[in-house]
Every structure is written in structure tokens, then in C-alpha cells.
Length: 345
Image (cartoon, rainbow, N blue to C red; front, top):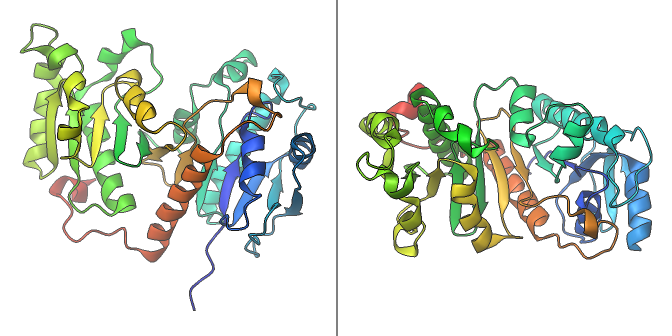
């Protein structure tokens, strides 16, 4: 008899946005996996009434796996500081957003939850509240005392990881140091092996500059940093191709030769992925001691409480988190012949 799976924790994100709506709509289906919302119960019930959808909330008990019945959801209670109205941002509720993440992450670390799925947050209102915040990826890395993580978005047919994430474009080149780039490739390679079962991942690496620097005429980062790092990693057994010009890398003939693309900055890789799979893509943080996936979109304040949002990205984030958690539980994440560098990491 198979062991009962641990539940998946889910944080709806910004309370005034569509995160609560998406969760409520998702659990209307009878076949959703065991989910535990780390959220304010009154917020969820109020939003369900606004959406005219049924919702029954049960307190989460660590000893009990939640039932997966339609319109039913287990909850770990995190109270809102002030009442919330759909579509209306409130700086005072920024601490609530982060408290939900802290509680859910702690539950993943302790083994209470198998994975964390995060709804969209509003970075601006958190910063307006006087709390420095650049995004989930960086916050969870600091929270789990993880020195370096890699943000990867995936949709059927394409995975794109990032060397730098939420930085102004003027700061990107300085952030790509040899040590940082080497660890990014290692983390990506290890994640593809351990969490996606790819024994020898094939990775395409973008150049930083137009035409990948064109032999130094359009920038020297490829010559001075990227090529030496990739050569070192190739010598250690990793299957890497690049640096390649991003404008030609993202073509079907080249992409079909790879398991993932490593882009140098946020808007180099993600527009292509979101064009291909918006609404059916997932954000994955590699390198954390926990499994974390997220939606690929923002808070959409104008849609909150209106019943017009689509659950495609959240449903895919849950599906991927469940798949990754099953791999971790069954220990099939161990590949037969990891590369030399993977064994060193």
C-alpha cells in the first residue's frame, strides 16, 4: 500500500489581486491534489461569496492529509492586518503576504508540506510599505539561507532559466561574474537531473551582447567571462552549447536540440517563453532546499473579484509541483551517471 502523499502548501499572494480567486476556482474541481492554503480564511470566504462560488474551509492538521473534495480546502490561518477589498491595494497587508510565505516555507522545510506553490505578489506595494522586496525568488533564497538560486520558467516544449533576475538592465553585465555564472549552470544542470529526471541535460546558453559579442566588437563579456566558464564546465562533463546569439537561439531547429535555455537576463528569455505558453507556464526556483513553483503572471487587480481570471497557470504550477514532489518521495531523482561537476556540487 503506497504512503499517503504530503499536502502541497499554497500561498495566494497579494490579497487584493486574483490569487485568492484562482485558488477558489481551482478547488471547485473534484480531482485537485491535496492542497493547504496558507492564508486568511475570512478573505477566502468573502472572495468566494463575491465570485458566487461554494467554498468550505477546514483547519489544517499536520497528522491528516486533506480531502480532495470539490469546493473544499484546508487552511493554515494567517490573519490579515486590515480588511481587504478586491482590486484595492493596502500597504498594511504587505506583512501578511510575507508572513504567509514564511509559514508555508517553514512547513516545507520541516516536512509538513511536500512543496510550495505561490500566487502572484505585488512588489510595488510591499516596497511602498517600507519593506525592501525584489521578488519571491530572492525572498525565499534569503529565508532558507540559500546563497544562490536559479529562476526557471517552463511551459510544454520550452524551459528558460535566468542568470540574473530582477535587476535594472544597466546592472546586468556587472552581476555576471565567473563564479556566479558557474554556479547558475551547476544549479540548472543539477535541477534538471534531480527534479526532472534528465540524466545528461543539454543546455543552450545565450550570449549577453547582440550577436553574442561578435568576437568582441559588440562587447567582451562573452570572451572574458562566458566562454571560459562554459569551457571549464564542458571539461567537467556538462553538455553545453554557446554562447549563442539570443535572436537566433530561440528558433525551433535549435531549441529541439536542448532540454533548457540559460538566458543572461530577465527580458532576454522570458518574452519568448511567455509568447509560447502564457497561461500554461510555471515559475520554478532551482537550488532551494524546498520545492517551489509559481504562476507566470501578476496580480491583475482589475480582474480580482470579477470571476474572469483563468486558472491555467496555477493549475500547471500545482501539476509541476506535484510531479516534482513525487520524484523526491520516490527517490527516482538519483541519476545513474551524474557529471563530474554535479558530483562536486
